[in-house]
Image (cartoon, rainbow, N blue to C red; front, side):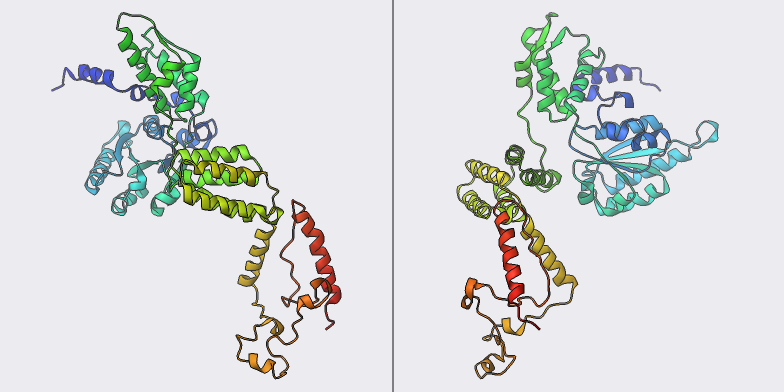
Length: 461
């Protein structure tokens, strides 16, 4: 027997749904952003048009539309949609979904063409256990269900390799400011799901505030709009008075922007990478911004100091030997004084390193030498360079035995200029090649003089 009151109940529930839920796109054309995967000719669009949807994993920051996109795919492909959270779903429930999917497939469709296929959407798939995966994977491979997963973390690190190997990965990017404004304008104008029936006036400044402070999270922007409208209605009453939302109202309706940051995830590594590359590229402004971003998100300042110390040797080296001292002092001060004052020390160090001349000659030299040690034949220490005190033959040196450790060593300070022709390696190899940057400009001329003189004074064989 049909429930006559079901439509009324659904309508009542719809009226109390949050704006962000009510405004979820109903078609792919309404979906904002992600043109890099959904634009004309892009991979996901082509898969949809060819009805070639296989298992997918969507990853990216919150509010970029991962869940909504999964629902739209189900609608577009006319498949049954099941939504679960990987953190709470159990093996029993997965088996139930699979059994229901099998029955759905076995139910004949129109013309006897077979039943309806099922999409299983799992949120937070980085919490997917091995037991859950084992139950699911075989049926995914057989095509009983189509699996779509979503995560805010990098699936290459956070998800099981068996799941990744059976899926196509798509990264969803934060919405641009213009895309967020478009979502907000649609909500303001929509008479059924949004505020199109209200005498609502929202200034461009207010839209800009939300578009910036939501950090590409459309859900957060819509929630701020809803807070602004509801709070303004409460203060004005319900007499049909115009509702004006200006910049100040918008500022008040959205909480302080919280950086999307996981101290062990992508943002942790991406942000420090951006800081390092900014300093390497001699951009102090970008370097300071990325440090501020990390500190505001709760990053450990000692981690930043450590990376600055590494960079001082790797990217500056002997072009400015003071850089390593500045970085070492900054690291020590950060350890001693902590936050918030440590931010100043980090900024001073980063700006110094960014403006210092750059050279990676020392970095290249040690890596080339390490490669030779690992890949080539080991070079024995020449007899005359060995320590006579650490060898069993050491005492024979004093008895004049030829070939003893230390025999034939030339003391550099005993010759003019302290440059000898002594061979200190045993093979002709040059690792350190200074570049014309900072102090290393002088090193080029000095090293050329030294190498030339050593070759001239080297004993003939």
